[in-house]
Structure formats: C-alpha cells, structure tokens
Image (cartoon, rainbow, N blue to C red; front, side, top):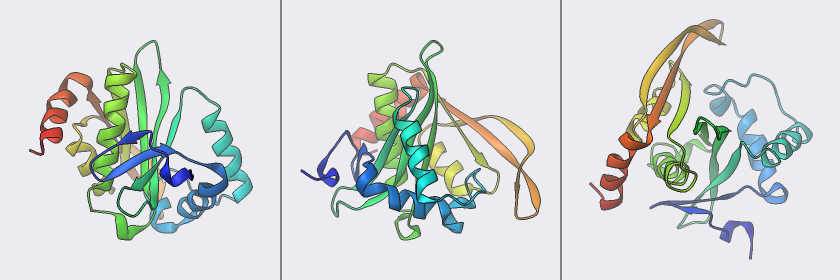
Length: 191
C-alpha cells in the first residue's frame, strides 16, 4: 500500500491522510516556497528541504498538532495540506491551517471539503468545542471558504502583517461546534 492509498478522513471529493516524509516533503517544500502560496501565508523566509524536514518532524512529534495531506479521491493526487494546530485539551480549542498547493486545484471546493472533514474529526472525535483561524485581509478566498464552513469574524489585528511593502489587517475567525453541527447536517445531505 502506498501513502496515496491511506485514508484517515474522507470528504466528498477528497481524503485526508497523514503526510509521508519520504514522498510528500518535496511537494510541501515547493508549495511553501511558491510565491503564489506564500503570498497568503505568514511565512516570508525561503525554506530548504532540510528546514522543511525539521518543521515536519516537529509537527508530527507534537501531539498538539495534526498534519494531513489533501488528496483528490478520483486522481489520488496530493494537492495540499490541512492541519489542526495548537490543540488545547483543557479549553478544547485549536487553530486550523491549510493551503492548496497548485492553483489549478483552487476554487473547486477541495479546500471546503477537506476543512469540513477536518472539522468533523475535531468536533465529533476529539470533542473540541471551538476552532479558530486567521487570514490576511486580502485573502478573500480563505475568508470565503472558512465562512462556508461556519467561521465567523471574532476580531481584527490592525496592520498586523507586512507584505509587499505595506501593512495589512489580520482577520481572526472561529467556528463553534454547535454552530457547525447545523452546517454539517446540511453538507452531508447535499443542501
């Protein structure tokens, strides 16, 4: 069995599986360095394969993080990363992170499908109660797809992020389990 055949979580269009260091690390390193991806992330530094490997090892060895690859069911192609970070087992909260690596796969619902599958796991298996996220003000796609998954704005960090010679606001969003459950029922039934 190859890593492409492993299924940890299943959505309608995608599966989420543990990232495999041997087969997936080069994809992750290429994506995180891609200006089209990096523009929407807080990272501004180039990352070597060695640095990406250290990051990967740190993530998978820290039980407050869950790192998964997004794979299209039909083609078995790894297209991005979805994560649950800084899981706080006392307060039952976490932060999500995600990106679709290749722009040809953006805007097709894969991110929403992956996020809904991850939220189902976070709320229905891990019994978390609130999941947070953030996005730079100009990242309309991230804000829209999180809104589809039930996230609502909780605050704004004014002029928090420096990109392309200017400061931008960072929008803080979150979804609570009870609000998401209503969306989940509709999502499962196809409404």
